[in-house]
Structures are given as C-alpha cells and as structure tokens.
Image (spheres, rainbow, N blue to C red):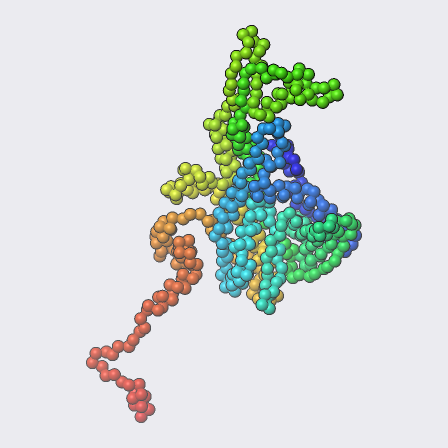
Length: 511
C-alpha cells in the first residue's frame, strides 16, 4: 500500500457520516423480502467503502503502524531510507482512558432496590474493564458500540454486555431531531481459507434480531436465516460518541504525527548516511577507462567511464577529475557530508510535540515544569484544558451509560422487580472521579475542616480518595464501633434504699 504522504485530504466526505432512514420507510420493511435485502447490501457496502478505510487507518496509528511506513521509496537505492513511527496515538489514548475511567464510575440512587440491581449488574459484567474498553474505542475511532443480551449463569438470567467492533457495526437513525435509533447492523466474515467466505449480518431492531448469511462467491445469495425476539424494548446496541463530531482523540493531529515521524526518520537517515559518507578524492578517475560508455548494441560498457563512476559510487568513493586545470592535478581527499542544524531540528521537533499534545489537551508529563513540587492550584491550571475536554466527554459517556440502564430495566422488570420503573432509573446519578495524583494530607485537612459543617456522608466521600473505603461502608463501620464501645446502662441502688427482689414484690402485690 502506498499513501500520498502529507498531501491532499486524508479521509472522504462520507467517512464519518451517520446512516439515516425515514420512519415510514422503516415501518414498511419486510425483513425477508428481496427489496429489503438489496437495501441491506447497499448499507453494508457503503460502510465498507466509505467508512471502513478511515477506521482501519486510525487503528493502524494506535498500533504504531503510521503512514511513514508506507511512504514512497527513495529513488536512490543506496541512500538510507528509515521509517520510524511514533506512538503518540497510544500515548494520548491511554492518558484519556486512565484520566476519565481510572477510577470506576459510581452510581447513586436513593432507591436502595434500584441501587442494588445496578451494583449487581456492574459486578457481573466487570463494568470497570468493559467501560475502559469502550473508552479505548472512543479515543481511537471516535465511536464505540456495545451489545446487551440476556445470558444465564447458574440457572439465573442476567443482562450481559459485549463490546462490538466499530469496523463491523453501525446504527441507522430516524430523520427526527431526537435522532432515535431504528436499527443496528453488525456484520463479520467467516473465512474458510479456500477462497470461500461467508458474511454473517445481524440486524437489531427494538424488539427482534434478524440474522442473514451472504456468500462472497454468490453476490445474490443473501438470505434471512434466523429471527429471534428480545425484550429490551429498544435497539439493544448502544452507540457512544467521543465528541459531537465522533472524531478520535488523536485524529485531528495525524498530520503533526506524520511530520514528527518524517523528522525522526530523516534524522536517522542523516546519521546513517554520515556513517557511510562518500570519500572524495581529487584526481583523474578515468585513467585506463574507455570513453565509449555503451556498445553499439546498447549494452553498457564495463570499461566505460559511466560504469567506472557507478562502481566508485557503490564503493562510497567520489573522484573529481582535476586534470583540465592548467597546473595539472592537485590530489586531495575529504568526506562528502551534509551539514546538520541540530539546534534547529530539535526545536522543530519540540514544536511538533507541543502542538500534538496541546491540540489533544494532553499534558506533557516530561515537562520540567510539570512536577509534584507545584501547588495544587498551579496544577489545576495545567490540567484546565484537559478537564474542560474531559467534562464534555463525560456528558456523552453518561448518556450512553443511562441508555444502558434504561435497556436493562426492562429485563429486570420481567424478572419480577416491579419497582424498577423508568422514572426511578432516571433518578440515578452517574459520578466520575478523575484519576489524578492527590495530596492526601491536603484532602485529610479539607475533610477535617468540613466536619460538622457538611454531612458525614459528604466528608467520607471526600476521604474515599485517601482511604479507598466507600463512604457508606465507612459510615457503617463507624456506627458499629460506636455501638460496641457504648457501655450498657445499669441500675445502681440508691444509697440507703432497700433493694426489693422482683419475686418478693410480686408476692406482696398479690396478697
């Protein structure tokens, strides 16, 4: 594969478009009909032709397989031609991934039954790992997808989450301002290795799942092979967006990354070429050589001056003919080396690094001024752009999490949890805690100063970052300790008073 390096448009106009369908067209679909199957083919082929190339290129950059690897070869096959790719894409991705979701997302709801269902749902799906994987796809592709299914474990049904690959998934929305999802399409190939390939296409609507098979050797062979009902009361594929434009976190600086890769590669080329510098000797290189470079039949003359010159070139020796000078030959020898402006080159590379990090809102942790000796306020200013960007991403991520819960609540209600209504789920608060270094002494002092002014719950939520213990658990521990340490009340006899036995008192009363 060859690419136009640092030239032209990188992606097409439709490489990141949403698929849209009129509601009336969606309502008229007959999922086994030839008309719909032809339309489904067009959707899949559009995704492959228009959107898949962008997604694949972004994935390459995340893996360090940058476009510098596919730069056109140099015309001089004896010159160094290094291809060094930088790992900025992964660096930016891992920073955002850890910054926003290094601390697990927390849910808060005053309804304890709802909260217990959410916690159980989170635990069974290892939600911290799943969310982190979703965030990685958001950083790379600008979008991410998850599938909700009803699974069974130990005889008990529960809602299971699966991540779907963006290279194989897209959602079709209606044409309203709400942009409601009408269906999701997930397709993948099964390659048998003998030239035969079968494509499986699954279409998810609000209440059913349709499965199609399509053989590569037979373009007209697509057919509906299975139809299954689900009970999520909504399209069970959840689409997340990294930002309003659904751009990857490093997508806007791909040109800067290419420029940095080129600078690094040319520096390596310079170093290598310097090690193999040409020895230049002033004299007569053609002594004993024929003046005729080619024979009459067009073959090169191995004793001709052209061939001799090429032989010297391969030997890294360049000889200049000095005989025409009036004084005759003046023998001299030196290495032919290009001059390298190391100061200017390093300044240029540093400017590229600064631009890449600045435009992706990623702090430079190697900056001498970015150290732990600074005050908390100065660190806040350094992270202000990152925080502003994170807030925008959190809003979109929270929308996806809430849609996930609204889908799951339909299954919980079927299982007999009648209290899990939509309005109760909507009362759920999603809490993100950025994963940044904290000064534990400062946090402890802040909590101490707030004690008695705000609720104990708030104080222990703040201390959660120091102790690692959940606020509710800490309150339970404190309550238990207080109860155990409290002495039991005892009835002490009054001095000078007669102690009356209970049984005697009862007998006297009866008499």
